[in-house]
Length: 142
Image 1 (tube, rainbow, N blue to C red):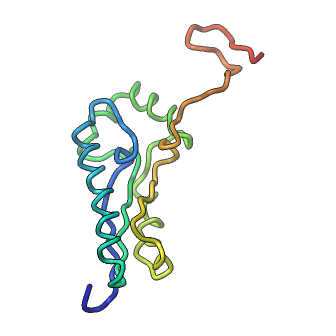
Image 2: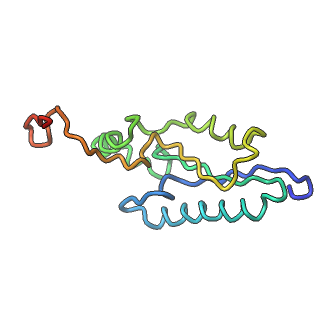
Image 3: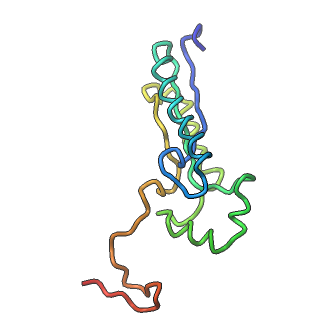
């Protein structure tokens, strides 16, 4: 790539590189390392016409985590926290990969592109719902 003065590197990170998740400390640390490596390499290689970015998927069912997806209660819990209300599907990554590999992204480097259905927003509500609460009582806004 350096002799050609052109290249696109897309590292695979995770939403865990920007948010902590119980039970995933070591995995999150490794993905955080990928995010940091992406920024460092972008700085090192940008002068050679090489962009380095990180694609960070959110929650997708993979071989590694499929046991979680076998638990309906956990899937419901997860979907409740994702603003688009569903886990990712493989094709959800297609356009992001094409963009990061394309000439049209030549001024994008050192970035982490989250494709996560919005879960990285924090997915915490600060509003009172008018539906039944966990106690079964109807919550009324003030």
